[in-house]
Length: 195
Image (cartoon, rainbow, N blue to C red; front, side):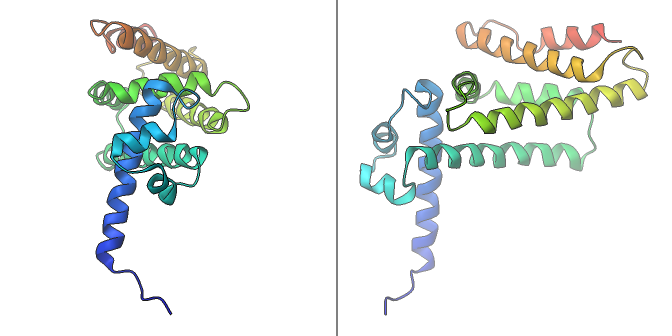
C-alpha cells in the first residue's frame, strides 16, 4: 500500500499549479487560446511538457482552470467592495483602475473574448455568461443611481449597462494599442450624460 503524500508535497504542488495558471494567463493573453501551446506555458514555468500535463491533462482543462483562477481573484475584489457597501459607479472605476495596473489582464480579456465569439471555442459559454452577469450587475448599479436621483427616470438601465460595457471594452482595446489613452474619462463622461 503506497504511503500517503506529505503535506509539504501538497503545498508544493499547489504552488506549481498557481505558477502554471499565472504563466498560462500571460501566454493566452498574448497568443489567445488558438495561438498558444502547452509547450509555451511549460517553458514559461520551467517545467517539462509532461510535468504540465501532470497538473492539467489538456489545453482546455488548463484554460478552464485559468478562467476559474481569474474569477477567484476578481471575486476577492468584489467581496471587498461588498464588505464596505456597494458604491456604484465608484466601485466600477476602481475595478477599471486596478485592471489597468496589469496589462496582461486587459490583453487576456480582449483576446479571449474576441476568440470566444466562435461557438466552438472552449471559452464561448464562459464569456457569454460573464457578459450577462456583468451586464446585470451594472444594470442594478444604474437602478440604484436612479433611485438616488443620479440617473434620469427615462434611462433604460439595462441598455445603459450594455453601452458602458461596450465603451469599457473598446477603451481597453484602444489602451492596448496606445497607453496614452485614458481608460476612465470616457466612462465617467458617459455616466454623467445619464444624469
